[in-house]
Amino acid sequence: MQDGFLTEGEMAKMEQERERFIAAQRNNDGDLIRFRTSAGRELDYGQALQEVQAGRIAGVNAFKAKDGQLHIRGDADGDPTNNLSELPQF
Image (tube, rainbow, N blue to C red; front, side, top):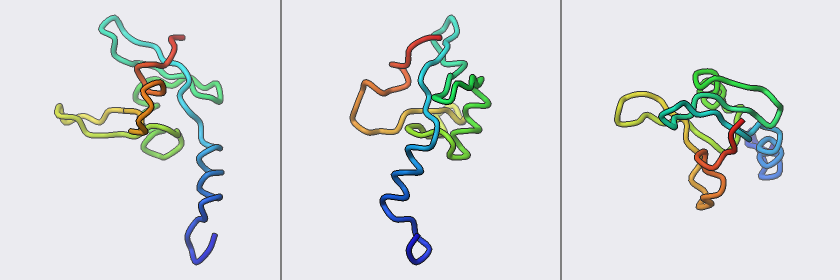
């Protein structure tokens, strides 16, 4: 840490240490309802949203949708293969 700011290397290390979503479960309507993380944890949508908001899950963010509710979405990185819709089922 330099001058109270994280270096680029420190930020990259923190990003690597955070969990990622690696699989998901969907309901009959196709809505995401559960996630499995890279650490093997299984989280329901509410738990996953809390983890995302706390910054413990990499590659995703929480946003307020038109319905006024908070939802989880993948970070916009231009790579469609890592979108939440592409997560394998478990």
